[in-house]
Length: 165
Image 1 (cartoon, rainbow, N blue to C red):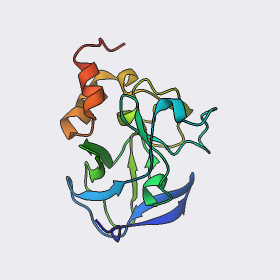
Image 2 (cartoon, rainbow, N blue to C red; image 1 turned 45 degrees about the vertical axis):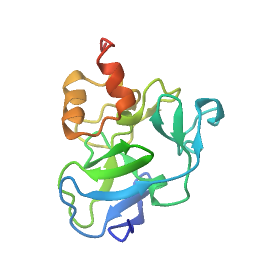
Image 3 (tube, one colour; image 1 turned 135 degrees about the vertical axis):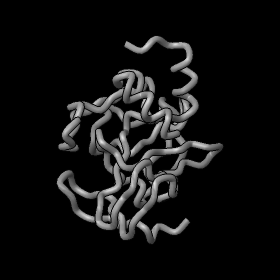
Image 4 (cartoon, rainbow, N blue to C red; image 1 turned 90 degrees about the horizontal axis):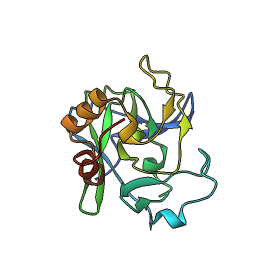
């Protein structure tokens, strides 16, 4: 898919991806790419400056691609989410995105036993203050993301057998 629906621009947290046109719920925004790496090959220490890694399975991550997907920022009130199917990772709209809106997803929806947490700077009214593992999200929020179809299988498997704190 060409990425002519989105563009890289400066934003309050550095750079971000913005919609060039209206994007409807369920529409694909972009495809994530990058080298595949395991947890053992993640950078240490994990910092926001060196962590462009997206967890896509229990012990598998997509590394930085140098493309737009590296700049999709986090929000506690996201308008998109990732869908992991086979070896493809797609970003899809989970609510209407108007032209000019920043495209964001909740990083926690892809994080499971990931050795990284960070303070959140999304400024959303419902900001949680920190980004961390999916299983630490409030149950109502977990259920919303599951309903939207943006929780990867490796996390769904654990939801079925792990009590959520």
